[in-house]
Image (cartoon, one colour):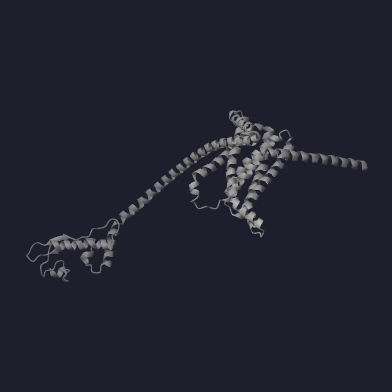
Length: 434
């Protein structure tokens, strides 16, 4: 029995050594794969801080945490399953999918450049609104999906000769490490101004000076990171497109950029590596900007056409609505003409204390008769006020025609002494005079 126990312990020791060796292999492979993707990791760390600019200080870390969780979901629920399955069964589809992601990065970067150019003057005058957190987080997670996909594909190319299980373990370790590094750095960057405030409040002169320096420098640092993040989108997206076209058989553009890089490397001696990298980066960014500008133009034309059709439909519906509104008041106006003509008379009676029956009567014309003493035929003048068929007249407008009619009657038929004209001046009614 002791021999069996010794054999079991020996087997356990062998398995432990094998597991330790596997862990070491996974760690070494993960470090190697992660080193190849370090450039994209730096770009990811530069891109993300721009999504939390303008937010309240207490919301920065929670939003960075939510973006980090979204990044882990991207890696473990979308990217890892897709690239592992494709690498196992359809590896030819990895490059086209990665190029689609690169085109999206070019579009994002070119759109940000266009916004800076087209709306530079209006940003200073408009009132700054609080950004929508859900929109910011969704945009950051979409961008992270493309950057993380490139990180994972680069890492996959380094471990393509491993077994399926080894690839799964290695890429899982890379996913966790890269997420912690990227969003840990982002959290430190966005909270650096708070650290500066704490240091500035300390009694020590050196600490307070350092804190004030951090507080003053952080806005400039965040602005620089925003510019670097936009440039990184264009550079990474353009580089993905260049490499993808070369892998798909379109070699001329990639070879042209590669020859430029080699020429710069050979011409600068000790600084050849840095200068060559800069040449490749700038060329990739130019390619990304061109591709992104084309996509932005296509999207702008498409959205403009859709909005134009929407405005035409809205204008048509408004025109139909105006026709109905105009037709209904016209009918009511025609039906109420009699009432509109009768209403001003009442207003005139109420507002003119000295008005007589002759002055206020507007519903039927009245003849003013004057008999001269010499026996001339009596003159008849029509003093009827005009009947209103449109907008109701005011009391002053009704009284004015009556006064004018009286003046005309007096000019045509002057009264003789002792003779009643209209029967109003001497207080004698027309019936009694006759």
